[in-house]
Image 1 (cartoon, rainbow, N blue to C red):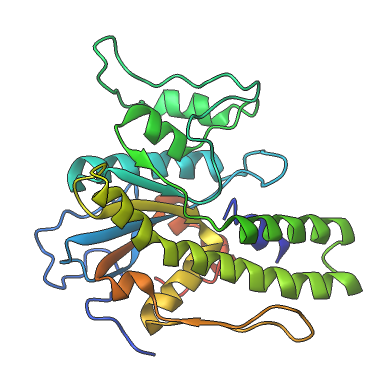
Image 2 (cartoon, rainbow, N blue to C red):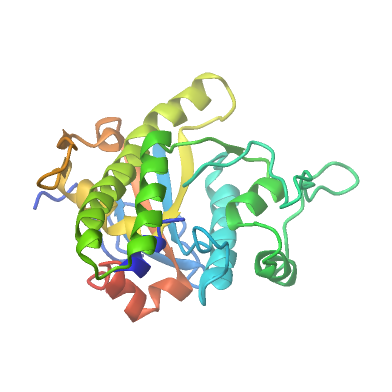
Length: 295
């Protein structure tokens, strides 16, 4: 279970819901995600002018920054999928999980330069360059940062800072006490609750952020890419399928229940959830993240 937690950094059917890429629900003229980039595991309301594309991903370790066995390849596929969405769907806004500086910097605090050519035009990264950048453990670079470097795309925060910090504190405590101790049972129940609240908070904030960027004229359409760890995807699908969010506090804790509708659906957003190919083909990972029923 600890592995699934670390992945965090990462019924009533909605009309148009499907569990397989390529299923026709009146969206035959909408381009399909290239097979090599990833797999669509959920979609609804594809015809709405408002769209959010959620990409599940594998992050580096939350505290050490080290890459896992799938991290680099999945990050490359996230970059390629994001690039495809920017080019084919005209997306101009990126909403990454986690907190980040508006200007990316390396481990020494030096500003990371953009991948612009001499004439100021942004240029895409090839596979070799992506691998070199993402494999470098001496600096923290991820797919979202590379998309912002190589494409003219806005980025905004969707995290709730209090929930974000509370989750990090609980993970630190769990690592301190171990995963099979008496203390860990209480820590784990609180962490599970906070992680679900954090997932819901990010999801609920998306329409507000997109509307703000659109109103200020920074984007031309109400569309965005939202990147988030694989461990959050099953909860997001549950909320969208049920058209409600129900999160109950654990016994003997100070937390409150959270009950709400889903802001994305109430604001007429279409949702497409994509998993990178290397992760979609990993049966063990899908089981670990409660996504093994998607195939």
